[in-house]
Length: 228
Ligand code: C5P
Image 1 (cartoon, rainbow, N blue to C red):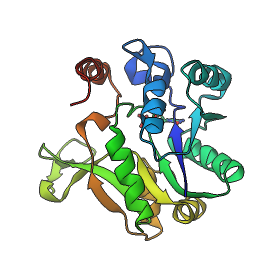
Image 2 (cartoon, helix red, strand yellow; image 1 turned 90 degrees about the vertical axis):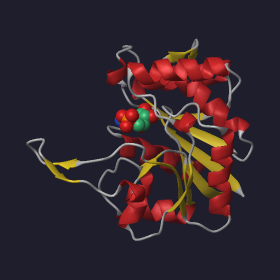
Image 3 (cartoon, rainbow, N blue to C red; image 1 turned 180 degrees about the vertical axis):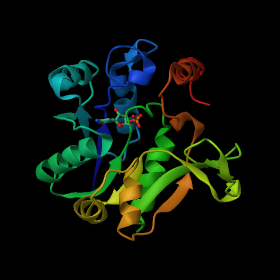
């Protein structure tokens, strides 16, 4: 069975303040995207990687991955994350018509352990149409109104923080992108809209998303320590 990972990496990453697309920001001298693609391929269960890069950076991104000995297909991304995933998915369906399982993985979650990647693939291959890695919520969460006044306090025992890679059987993701319409902050959100159940499995702290300079400092420290 063929597994393809779509890697949306076309964000500008302004919150990191590096002046380059987030996926190209270095951690211990190597671009986040290189760490991410290396991790995906080292998991062993991924056949192809399709990266959505900023349109002006497609050839540079391709050259960067090749220079690190990584085989990936690079396509131009879109205006938001959903558009970038859609473009990468269309490419994957065209070039790899035998694909059975599709993973979507944020380049910004560059240090996700291979065990999480493989657990997501295994759960899809065992028959779950949609699978996402999650962590429990450590903080109390409040819902607020437009004036920053608290409305209510959801029971945190029922809440989860969502990570990637998110895994789907190809037919489910194809239908979600065809029917769900709007953008979503994650791909499982589109699958939920078409009424397909989404299974959660344990995520990992190392699958954190690098968004701010603080996250970058944590990523540098995590990498210096090696795998836990
Ligand atoms: O902005 P945020 O951190 O939520 O972005 C999540 C992922 O989506 C990042 O890996 C980013 O590069 C990607 N993205 C994209 N195309 C966009 C915007 C974001 O591929 N137009």
